[in-house]
Length: 481
Image (cartoon, one colour):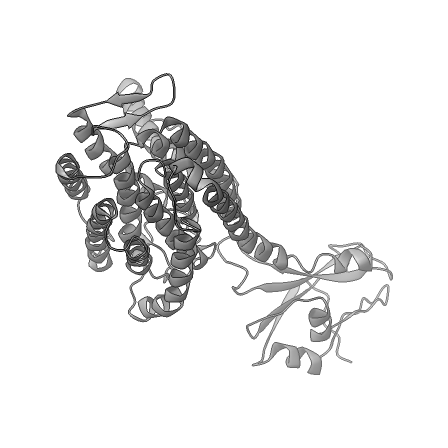
C-alpha cells in the first residue's frame, strides 16, 4: 500500500466523482517511529452524513515534529466553511492529528444541519406567531367592530397572498435570474456582504401586485380606502422600479439622485393627503383629520397639520423600510409584522383596511420564503418603497400613526443610527478636526455584523423585538379606537 511523506504537505486529487477516487486510492499514513496508520476514504464521509459537491479533496499530513502522537491517536476530518461562503459552497477537508475519542470525532460531523435548522426555524417561528395572532383576532373581531364580519377576515387574505407569492416566486425568480436582473452590491463600508454577486433583484415586481390585487378582490372592488392605499403602493413601487432600473445600467451602481425620490414621495404623500380631505372615507367619528391616542389623550384633532403629518409619514416610512433592507429576510419579516399590527389596529375604524394589511403581510411572508438567509432574490427599492407607502397609507386613512411608529421600532432604530452617525461625525470633525464615529458602520445591523454577530442571529433578534412591538402596537390601536 502506498505511503505518503509525513512532511506538512497538501495532496489534491481531482476526479469527476471524488468518492470513487477515494475508494479506488486508499490513503495510508504511516509514522516510522510509532508505526501508527489510518485509512481514509469516501465511505467514512458518507457514514458520518457529510458530502462533497465538487471534485477537489484536500488532504493534509503532518509529521511528528509538529504534533506528539502515539499509536492510539487518530485523525479527525473536519469540514470548514469560510465566512464569505454558505453551507452550499465549496469546502475544504483537512486531516489534522488530534487526541480524542471516536465518539467525540463522530459528534463533530453533522454541524451543517444546525444552519438548516436556523434557516427554517426562523420562518416557522414567524409563521406560527402571525397565524396565532390572526386567528385570535378573527375569533373576537365581531366583538371589536360590533358588526357581523365574514369568517376568517384576516387569516384568509394572509394565507391567500402568501400561497400565491410563494408559487409566483418559483416562476419569476428564475426568470429574473435569466434576464440578469442582478442586485448591485454596494461596498460603502468595511462589510463583506453575504449575498451573492448574482442575486436577482426587483422582487417587489411579483409580491407587491399580488398583495394589492388580493386585497382589492376580497373587498369586492368596492372599498375606497383600499383603492387609495393600493394606488399609493403602486406609485411608490414605480419610484423604486425606476431607481432599481437605473442602478442596473449605471457604472457606479447608483440609481436616482437621493433628492429626487424624496421629492416624489413627498409629492405623492401631499396629493394623498388632499384626496383624504375630500374623499368620503368610512370613519366611526363625525369628523376627519383625527388621531386616536390612548387615554387620557383620546382623539386629537390636527386640522391642517394632518396633511403635513401624512406627507411626513409617507417620506419617512419609505426610507425606513429601505434602510432595513440590508440583510436577508430582515425587511420582509419586519414589514409582515408591522402590517399585521396595523391590520388589527385599524379594525375598529375600517375593516377593509384590515384586509389590505393582512394581504400585504401575507405577500411579505410569501416573499420571505425566497428571501430568507442565503436569499435567492432581493426586494430592491421596488419592494421596500412600496411597503413603506402601503404602511403610511393605512395610517393616513385611519389616523393610526402612533401604532405605526411603534410597530416599526426596529426600522426607526436602523434609520436613527444613520442620523446619529452623520451628526456625531460632522460635529467632532468641526470641533476636533477629526471626525469620530459612534458605530463601526451604519445601518445598525451592519454594526452588529462587524461586532461578531452572525446574520441569522441578527435577523432572529430583530424578529423577536418586532413581534413584541407589533403586539404592543395592535393593543395600543385597539384601546385608542
